[in-house]
Amino acid sequence: MSIVIFDSGFGGLTVLRESRVLMPAQRYIYVADDAGFPYGDWEEDALKERMLGLFGKIIDRLHPEQIVIACNTASTLAIDALREKFPNLMFVGTVPAIKPAAERTRSGLVSVLATPGTVKRQYTRDLIREYAAKCHVRMVGSKDLAELAENYLRDGFVDEARVEAEIAPCFVEKDGRRTDIIVLACTHYPFLVNRMRKMAPWPVDWIDTSEAIARRAVSLLPHSATQLRDDKPDIAILTSGNPDFPTERLLTGFGLVPAKSGLN
Ligand code: DGL
Image (cartoon, rainbow, N blue to C red; front, side, top):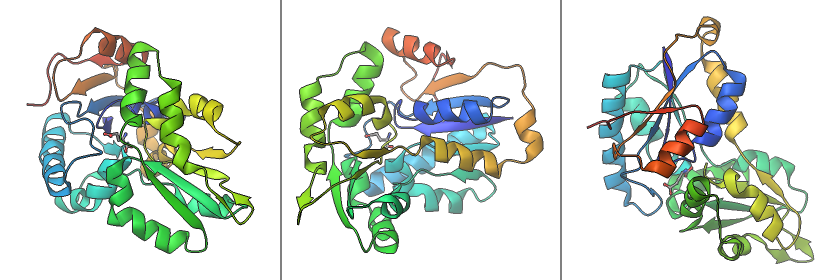
């Protein structure tokens, strides 16, 4: 039995990392739709259709016990449609942590840093209306941060000036108050959080949901499933079917064996 952790790229590795801590006995299959990356700019209907097709293949070929969609851009668009289409499968979604941010803020100024797709979703707007109506929520859609995080993961380098420019709109001053919480609503961003902290004009709390997602995943599994481990290795499947050398090195570093072919 296995858990599939899915993302458009390698941001979901933040969730894999936390999942291994909480569920070390599980076998993990990491699936990255790198052929479709980045998801942030996709037109909604086309992306939803792509995801329904892709998840059909994932379920047929891999027979997972659970699928963790470690991607806000994908979850906010398609989690309901996926649950409807595959009612017997256990899905764990990832959505912007607006509720905990609204509970924790002192200044009442909260920013949500996400891909352009997540920012424009009805799902995200509904979360704000439901949980953060009393806060001033600034939505910041970043075109480049997910890609900067991928480059950083693969090459170990990030242009800090670009990170600074991308996060700058998150910092709001209003009536003598300042933003005190920034929600990292893309699973790629925790990889850059130290750089963000360094480039921030004032200190804030950065909310990273990866541990909460892993906790949710473990809470849904039957106790027996968290104790068993088959002896197959954890693997990574890329939809491009074609990892280059830095990608192979990255996946191997996360204890994943890169599969030789994609899902097609
Ligand atoms: N990691 C994804 C998320 O959590 C998005 C990255 C992308 O495809 O742009 O939203």
